Image 1 (spheres, rainbow, N blue to C red):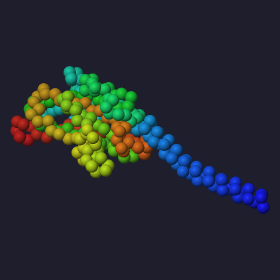
Image 2 (cartoon, rainbow, N blue to C red):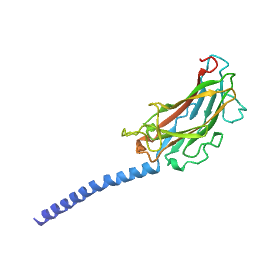
Image 3 (cartoon, helix red, strand yellow):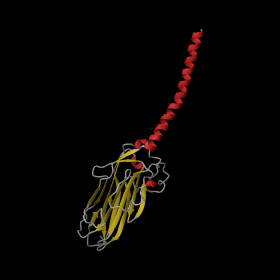
Image 4 (cartoon, rainbow, N blue to C red):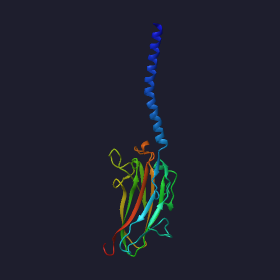
Length: 237
């Protein structure tokens, strides 16, 4: 009888230890996952034709012409620019970004952000209104939920983000994307021959965003930008 009692006693102790471990192990796993989320969320900036592409859409009248360059002297004019930005980035605090992002020409990406500065010039003979559109060309794994895109136009920065997932409005310190796929869109009016607009685009994953979670790992994100003449001032087109 004593042997039976000892066996039962040991079994009860094992059950007790099992119950304790059942509570502790999930908690430990959750802590480890959170640590991985905070320390190492890796994303890929989709780069089939470069991480960021700028292009000028054709316009029928030759007198209305836009040209692009990644230097203000327009030594090389083109209708298409391609930034070969870093493809592997980790989430960061946007407040730690360099303060001179708008002061370097061409591509000047850092370890965990993509940055590109370029210029658009009226190379035609007439004053025009043109429209720029910054849009998402590719996105996977809901990565756009945690992406930030800062656009400088002639030195004025605006940081864009997707609407907060809880529906409360824009993320703190940001302007909401115009639509699900269009980040920003605006018209540059009275753009006279020889006038130049300076742009800087900066992309990063915001680590302080509540949506910056482990399911974003391996996500892909690519944005493009187009410039198009929508009105010729001379003849009211």
